[in-house]
Image 1: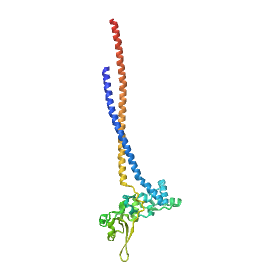
Image 2 (image 1 turned 180 degrees about the vertical axis):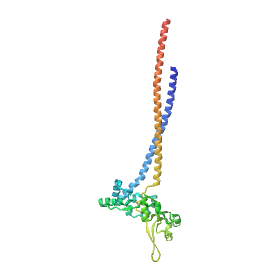
Image 3 (image 1 turned 120 degrees about the horizontal axis):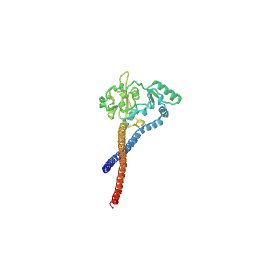
Image 4 (image 1 turned 30 degrees about the horizontal axis):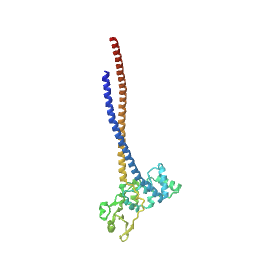
Length: 325
């Protein structure tokens, strides 16, 4: 019976040692994957930081352009809890031009005064800002109001862009940017960005033929403004060359940022999955190690019993020999 138990223990310990070896190898493999995952995540986080650094560049540009607006922005960030509605930082920090090459058209539409303005959606907040920034801090800051009940759907182009492609137009200003809805609706209401198309060199050749509904538009190099004489009905077109100030050309690549954020989310889920698998393996390894330790102790006791049996057996043989003698 002792010999049978001894063989069983030895066999079970071999099996446990084999399983532990497989599990330790799997655990090491998962730890390598987890470490690689961590390195990948740091790389992605660095890319996000580089993209978001654009915001810091814009803030520095704002500081150089209008120091009062810069100070107001810092004050707003520290006192955002005091407002009833939404209050947005200067438009040049909130607006993002999807393709930086189109920034020149936005810059030639929105005057600097509004580019550095704060936007409120509550009139009480607006009064509070005027008192806090203008009266108390003596900052020359522009503050505008945007009706929160207005939506982007309220501002639709008079003519679909598809019908204007023959003139070289490829987009309306409103489709070239992203920004919080209150800022978009403010710009639609005050600067008609939803009805201002942007064209190419072809537009320069046929600007006289543009439909009457379009009173302001861009070619690749010029801004055109059209009006009609009240008396003769004659069309009057003003043409101004456009120049970029560069403030909105510093733009965040939202598509790239969204893609990297998606990769980061996938990376985080994989990291957590590796973590769970490693923990499960570790729990199983601990359980088997404890089982192996108990078997080892039991095996030690069995070997001691075997040794005692052999000792007693030797004594018996000695006594038998003495008796026979």
